[in-house]
Amino acid sequence: MKKADFVKLVSDKASVSRKDAESVLNASLEAIQDILIKGDAITFMGFGTFDTVYRGERETTLPGTKRRIKVPPRTSVKFKVGKNLKDAVSEIGEK
Image (tube, rainbow, N blue to C red):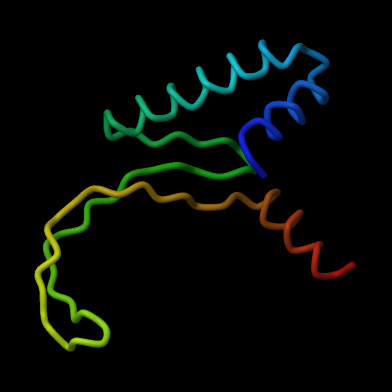
């Protein structure tokens, strides 16, 4: 699904214009990004938690060449799925 399709879905579900839905979506994504940049986590009960994790420097092997390289340290975003979302998605396979 592309962003435009998602905006249409949200506008239909919320009974608002596409322009308003896109504006709220963009503001929400920006707010989530700002929270993560500050190093804080954000939790949506039942849906999941967005958090950051620090990954230290490590060595890895390039596939095919067997050459060893160093991967620099970095901070990544991680998402832990919530129970309601996990249960809803797991029902797909049961149908």
